[in-house]
Amino acid sequence: MGGAVSAGEDNDDLIDNLKEAQYIRTERVEQAFRAIDRGDYYLEGYRDNAYKDLAWKHGNIHLSAPCIYSEVMEALKLQPGLSFLNLGSGTGYLSTMVGLILGPFGINHGIELHSDVVEYAKEKLESFIKNSDSFDKFEFCEPAFVVGNCLQIASDSHQYDRIYCGAGVQKDHENYMKILLKVGGILVMPIEDQLTQIMRTGQNTWESKNILAVSFAPLVQPSKNDNGKPDSVGLPPCAVRNLQDLARIYIRRTLRNFINDEMQAKGIPQRAPPKRKRKRVKQRINTYVFVGNQLIPQPLDSEEDEKMEEDNKEEEEKDHSEAMKPEEPPQNLLREKIMKLPLPESLKAYLTYFRDK
Image (cartoon, rainbow, N blue to C red; front, top):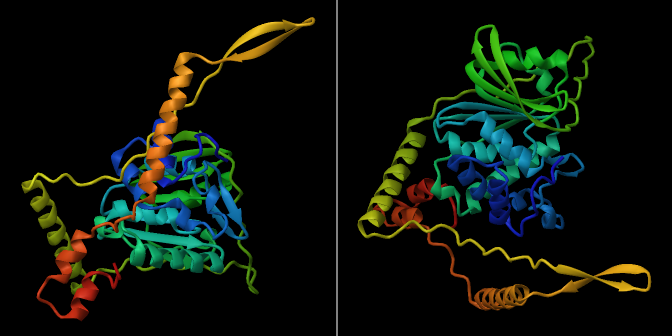
């Protein structure tokens, strides 16, 4: 499933295409997509395909097409502080984007059938926290992943404000999914080849809306134990943050607000990543000539075509000269403020999440 938008050269280019095609419609969702580079979730050697609007699968590792993820993110109507459950959390790509919107006081849980994929997701999450330039620009709700079949969730599990299921749901499992949802919550899942948004309006009432025609692999049916019954799967606990963690959140928030106020006072705009100019496509004008008894099209260059070629050549030369310049590392103002605090080095390391940059 996918191919609804043009391929991009990098993550920002892909997001531009998704916005242009109206798959990404809100600023909050756009910021989350730009902050997480889809290519980081691909295996080495496959990254060239990361910015195409196509699903990707290698063994048990799977990523849906970007147009699907963007429709899901928009349909979930995420807000800070909500609880989210990802059924079939896979690589953790979607859960990490969701975490940027939920913020530090949300709940972000995922359940995944394959243990090797859960380990892969945890590796990618750790890499994002330790290495991504985006991490310090957001308040983050870190996902917690467990191994298990989402059709075996324990009956006494808590309910969630937002739920997404990344596999095809048969009609006889629809009510099972709905019960996991809080009143007022939103569930997004594929049912009968339709990505569907379900809102729980009351204890026993729901409203449904079809979003997009899709094709998903069906949910894997649970295997039974020696007693002839499937084992239940426990979801991560909804733990309350300790005082140490709360202190880190509020110190980082205070410093971040101070930096923003300082930049506004100096009239310094917050820098957005530079956008690449799109290369204009030359359109041929055809004329037709008779050759024998056949009418043959002949390309005819116009003056506008020639000017377009010259402009594209100038842009390519400019891009090449800029690429030859040594790239300056991005400035992390939050880290700089933390490292200047009169605190022990161990506490500074804790405030920076033990990041090296």
